[in-house]
Length: 252
Image 1: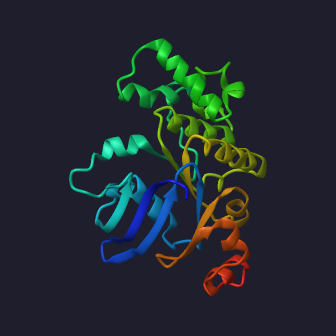
Image 2 (image 1 turned 30 degrees about the vertical axis):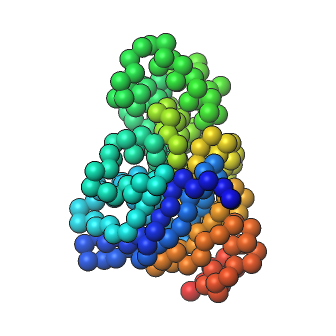
């Protein structure tokens, strides 16, 4: 059995009086791509934002249950949230480069974590851009604004920025929803390449995307994990009628 990086056990989350996650249980396996699918508002993004405690930033958010990362509950009172976010990076729906140069976008995180030597920073810039398959397109314009890049390039820059601080897990919240088909294909290829070295969790509305690139898929509906398992089984022989109706487009 594949090694488990994260284990979610009966996770419940409320925004004020509104319960957004209900008894969610699922594993996240090392060096695999796990996709979360389901209709809008079903809790997919809320769930991955729990994985690096991004929901801490939302007023009135309350979490119960366990989210174990290498056996430690990240919601324990003494958990180091800054260290956690260094290990578990996030890519958002729309590219969000910082208003600075391509180079400074990549070196921002390493500098915060105390890396100051220029040769070391240069090495991180090259490594991260190569991993994000952006080096050839950006190497001659590192001091230009990140906003000079196309949308797809900006999203790969954001991935490179995440990689610059050596995470273990990469969370992707609908990373291709704002991109054209060509840029989408590049991000999908990149996700598959990254799983050799990283564990990837991706939220997607695109079921074909989940079927193409993920090893495991979870189908969520109204805050609950309806079904979780091997992607091939979920798409070809789901156990739950609700899953089958969603996948075959007979939903609602």
